[in-house]
Length: 191
Image (cartoon, rainbow, N blue to C red; front, side, top):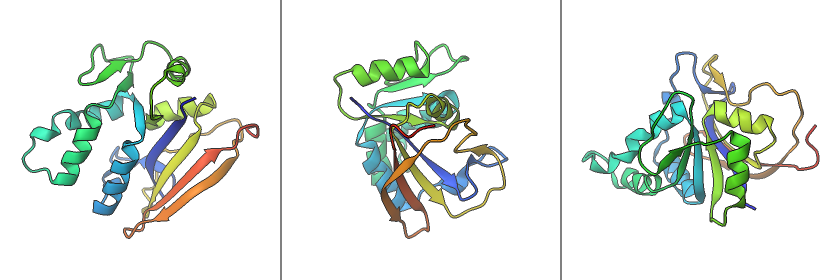
């Protein structure tokens, strides 16, 4: 069965977006960008909320941008053909290799887990990830902690009414001070 991962950058005080709606503080340097590019190679399908989908639309035509370096062109070449499922109540169409979700997040994940495809199911966007987490659908959390305090905004971990125990699988510290933490959900211990 395909695993479900949630991979996002977060400020040290726990936010994926600052109080002004920005996340420029999470822009990766060259080393982190290579790491994130390697991570996307393992993804078979990406689930996105509307805001993340709209942010990532740039990458659908980025290969036409003459100012991009080889690393960014490589990312675009991986992102563009990647199947994407977009969850939105306001969009009526999506572009590229994307489709609008036909059901809720639990229904979509169940369908995708049963599919005989390679690669894990990635969830992006804090609102969608929170919904999947609340339903106990996430198998791994891949957190890139940035050395910044933003003072508020949208939290990585919304408040849950249950406890979820995690097992540390991997850590890595980047020269920029970003700390990568990979945790697997300890099944059978969620409360």
